Image 1 (cartoon, one colour):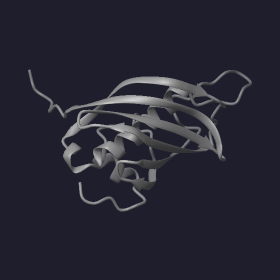
Image 2 (tube, one colour):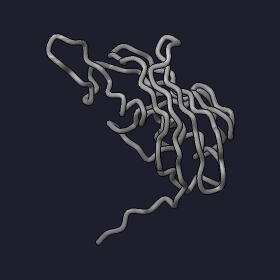
Image 3 (tube, one colour):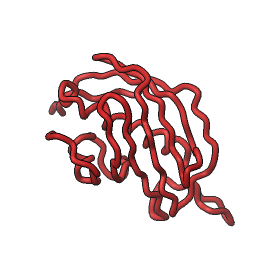
Image 4 (cartoon, helix red, strand yellow):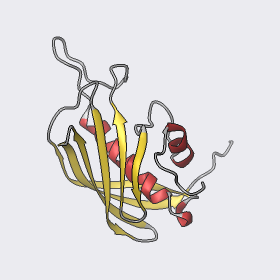
Length: 154
């Protein structure tokens, strides 16, 4: 991975994260401050398979999907460090997560991840997701860095 040139599009994000469609939840990275903060975009579309639908109600993006999108934006921040490029961040826990508002198709979710603590093998990020400037979810996530395991045949 070379120096990051913003904005990062979907294909650039695929070169950083191991996730692929439909599990890659970040569409673009628009801001990046190494070891401090990152901002990403998730466009919510009606065609997303994990939208929660109820008769007579507008479909809603499950809050757990938003939480994973925040974790993925944070993972891009961590994996951008040269010493972490051959590692993977493993989601270890979440604290004080608050879901404030529903997210619907057509919404553009702006996701910000801020470093609270960053060590060589673990760290803590605070994530905030907003739609139209209003917080829809926020929380603190802990991760550990481990080796990127190659697939082995049995």
